[in-house]
Image (cartoon, rainbow, N blue to C red; front, side, top):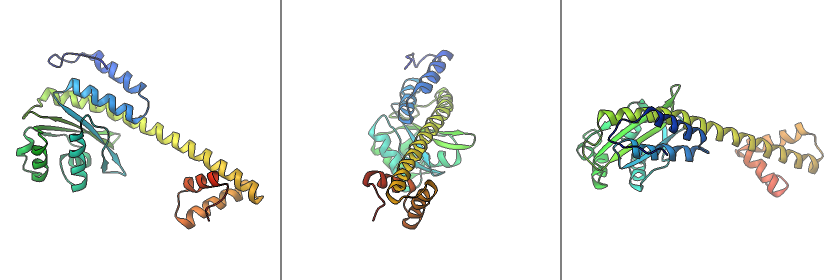
Length: 231
């Protein structure tokens, strides 16, 4: 992670180094961790977290630099409301200079005050109109985030959006490849056990999956583990 003086303008090569680190990150978790550590240095925040979008406009807690961020994220997810969800759904930046005094989300404001949070900056992450998640920056100080902080956070958000989307795609593709291999192994077992061809073996797996409302991968895993279909 490049180091620099937060009081000075961030040189362009620092973002280039960040981009390289994100490119070299191994998976979503490492990618997010790189983003959060950079945010702690580049922006006037004391805590940071990244909530990931799942199934469209729903959020799930991702990595955080402090348990209080996870508490704030989970509080909003459970309540179904808050600046994090507004940023996620509407893809808008939410900057709250005085969290305890925020009137739009009074219960959230009370939670923020109880945890000692003074300021919040939520940056939506998106690629080609597809929501990726929200980068949340927290400070214990009131009015901690200036316009320069928001500008840096937006640049970081753009880097993070591309990197996280790419990492998630790679993980999805890897899981798909693993699933195909697993189904192939299960088909081979059924072909030998029941003396059927490949098409018939796959039809058996698929039919069982549909009849029992079980994922095809899970059926295949059972066949591989137990050398036969579930009873």
